[in-house]
Length: 287
Image (cartoon, rainbow, N blue to C red):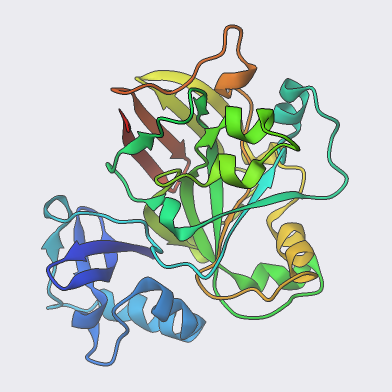
């Protein structure tokens, strides 16, 4: 099943996407939740019921092209990100292979959806791109093993970890968090694809195109810490909650590692594509 969030006249609404059409969760059943996060909170049985109800004849459908898509989960409890989680990117960066996940956070104010503009802050001149697979957590708990953690995954979406390198790497002590969480620096979407439709999240092609030119082209097989290992590691520290977004790192080809470096500029268009999950497209404008 593919879930999304649209902007309606009464605010964000969760929907089921079927091809070029969508079905509002509320129209499936009167007691259905009106947001994707609230649906996740109800557990796997609710997800299954929504999928089955959306397939019933007579359910009201709308043209997806007429809707404004937001981030699939616009109100996550947490946004946690991994750095240097691709072997080929660690090599590109001249960094040793991490023995444990390198972590930082973003805030919900950085989230935007497809076709929304990435706004370049006036205080940064080195804004970079990073294509990422994003885990969407589906239930509350603290799994103790990678195997158990797999049951905590609701699904996956496409993410873009926009990064102000001058803030991240050149400030005193390095400032990963602030360099990563300017407003608009966490595009996600266009949809959340449930885990049952992603047989192996560690075997997905992942690409980023800048103005049509491929800048990143790798596979999630390069990930150092698997989905399960990542969630189990995080669970040593905090409780996972439905709707948490976990950015899992980026492959090589980022702008700051190029010679000469390539940074985003006003008028650019960035597309992140992950096999089976779709294409996340965002224009760039100067703030």
